[in-house]
Image 1 (cartoon, rainbow, N blue to C red):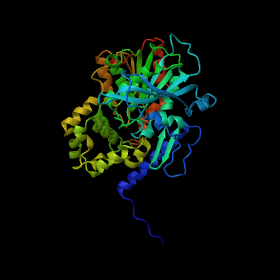
Image 2 (image 1 turned 90 degrees about the horizontal axis):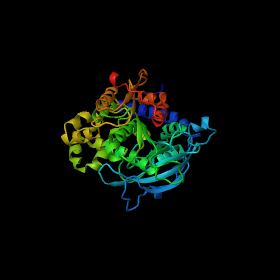
Image 3 (image 1 turned 120 degrees about the horizontal axis):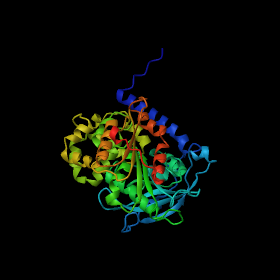
Image 4 (image 1 turned 60 degrees about the vertical axis):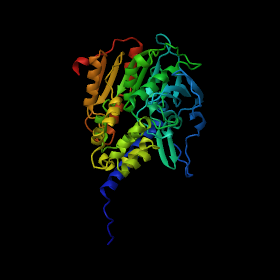
Length: 452
């Protein structure tokens, strides 16, 4: 009789399930972002992403003006959906860009991104409009920058193992199909030096608005300085789009913003932290803490009081990861495993007033956009709680913003496994583009503030 192997421990079972699900999600994403499987290099430490370190290294002296271009270069983007509907070619010419912005700490930073110039002429009113695409969660390693992953479709590195899917191209292509020129920001610290300050309201909003400023300064486009601009994003990108809308009147009044589309925006940081705890995205809390500590090193003693050795190790591990490997490493684990007293990280944070103060500064809704907004959220979203988005919309409505709130009524599919977060985005993939194109054409916006 063959002896039975001992049953795996609960933590091991959770990590195994997390890895299986994460790899399944990656396999599902891969056909959407590349025409063929991305080559996995056989040699240890190799990658299918070209070495672009020279481009991503900022100069010692940055320009004085936010949105000023630092450098540009032509780039190739691996097509995704255009393969199915456009004969296999992306209907745009791509450029990698670096521009000046203001970072989370208030000082000048260099941010990179991708500009996509449509090949088809614009037949709408005025100069061609510009869409700023704010990507969803990428990770915290420099290899996760959308401008790097979109170049190859699925970026793979063997040591340490890493996988970055260029899924920001999905939203970008929807905008291109509507006639928009598109700029996709990498955000502060992705590709460029320093930790990416994950879900930091000010950093994300500035990166998006300065990407718009940089795009209209490019040569050889049919944009004008006063081109109508919109911002579109989902998840982390939804929060960035919302932040850009809130900040534009004071930070970038020169950007001719006419509308924003914010899908599943994390508007209440503690509420979102509680929702992701125990799901596939648990490890993303490490991205946020790393970003906080970079901007607020004075908070390290507070975090040291709360985090145990495993929690501190988690911060170090995720700092170089993309989201796929973070879900494998920490998916389905509870944040109680990372604290000294066994409390959740949300409860631990609440016991430190200075941490709460910083997190509240990440929240949305204190001010409101002055342009029409589409806000999309799934009823059963397992990352961003539906009620927090309703509260954001009520706050905006109360300040006079016309808001079209759309709740996607998809039944729960697999709570905690990101499917209930991703499904509304996939089901409503073209909704943002239609709403924002109407803003360009001056169509009166739908406003359902009275029903929220």
